[in-house]
Image (cartoon, rainbow, N blue to C red):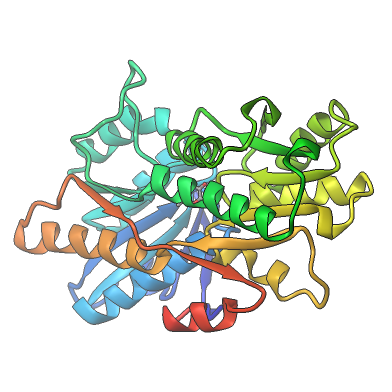
Length: 333
Ligand code: FCA
């Protein structure tokens, strides 16, 4: 992964601000446009990739990107104050909680900042999607469906007996994109003929490896007779948590097949000298999400071109230990 390492980190008003140029915040002599890019989980290479492609857009169109980490609601609202104070005209955001949508929009409006959402859609007070806020996201159900199909394909290739196999589906239903991915995956497994009463769901408390590991451990102890496991989850970290749990409970790598989603978060795992139960990952287009979302915001700010309300990115490729380097290189990752 190529990542810019020249980040200036400024802690301000309880907000972590990361920017390639300190002048993006402290004010620069020129009057170039400044736009924020706020992400909920900056530790995920997925979001680092979005940031780096947002910066490519900034270089191409000549605007400054102010990168900010917003792991919770308080930091998000503080970040918006900070952005307004820096003279930014708008921001792209992957919110730490979709229910913050109305509060984020109210604050943004109070400063006349434009907002484009990426990856996770805002929900209104009734819990309905805020479809009037522009959104760039992956085709969740379809990519989930592909995960289920690829798991079934690999299981068939290994000649597993379905009667001795279970599906561990680690869910995060509060996040709509996660729910749709996992449902898509289960649908594909059902349609392939996998026995539906051997598909077991377990919710994760947090969307990271430790959360998924705990969820998976609690599921594994309930089904001690299952010999082989297929691991389903909304992204790489969720599936990796499931894989780590199977290892902890003594399963050999050849009895486990996990396929993640995000791709860029699976690079270290796929590069390991010995194969693990993590077979591969579906790599969508974090490059496109990062570039397109901020490009549309820029054109909105600069030329008053209204962004599309919904851009669904459908591209996806399965990366495994055999092809991940080439596939990432093809996208410039
Ligand atoms: C959600 C997930 C991320 C990534 C993104 C596209 O925000 O939490 O890991 O998959 O959707």
